[in-house]
Length: 68
Image 1 (cartoon, rainbow, N blue to C red):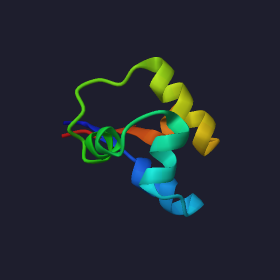
Image 2 (cartoon, rainbow, N blue to C red):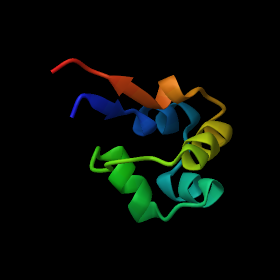
Image 3 (cartoon, rainbow, N blue to C red):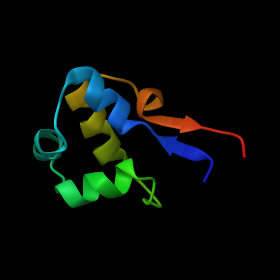
Image 4 (cartoon, helix red, strand yellow):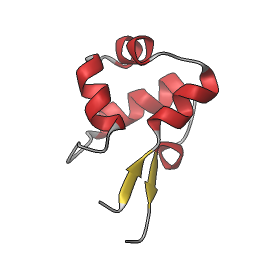
């Protein structure tokens, strides 16, 4: 998949655990793992907005297009 999810990078920068992130965003840790591992087929805009709010970042910090 040419879209790479960089949640792990942003979490590491902030020294935030997946559990804390999941709780603050309103997701289950399992759903965060699906996003982190690139297995998600879609992300709702309200979820993306919550992730950006919690991490104080832009969507482009979390998602990257990589040419195959």
